[in-house]
Amino acid sequence: MNFHRLKNILSIILALIGLHSFSVGIGLMVMPDNFMSFFGFDPPFERFFSTQAGIFHIVLCVAYFLSAMNIDRYRHFILFTITAKFMATAFLIFYFVFVKNIWVVALSGILDGLMGTVVWKIYTLYKQKLVYISEKKSTNTVKFNKPVIIN
Image (tube, rainbow, N blue to C red; front, side, top):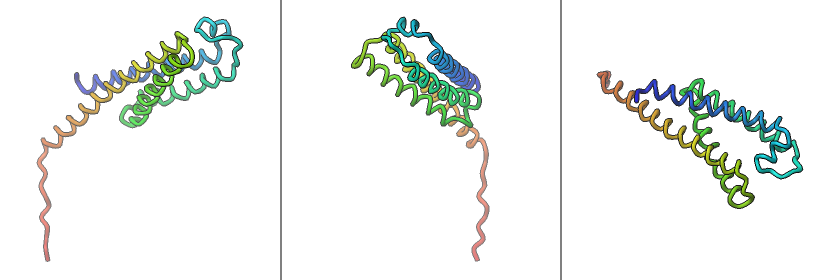
């Protein structure tokens, strides 16, 4: 796969992850209580924690969107994205297995793991192509050492 195509795919995936995170954030803040029951959570619901989680998702989406807009400049946010997705996966699967079997928690854990894995794999390929291109450029140029004058 060519370098620019790989970069575009990575950018699109990061933007989609950002859109997903933004949508989840808004949903957590405005979702009516009866929808929370549908997703497996027991009433009564305290709106503070779902609103806090919603804001957290929106903060995360800023990093996702920044990295999507300029992969080279914001590459640290790509590493942040991978870390956030794998940490979320670990937490959500742990919660599902050891605390309470809520189907949306398991589904979220699986999806976060998939998103993190896809970003990790594509970013790894992108970095390999970047190194290959920079090595290729450096071998095509002839460098001469300046003569050293010794007194």
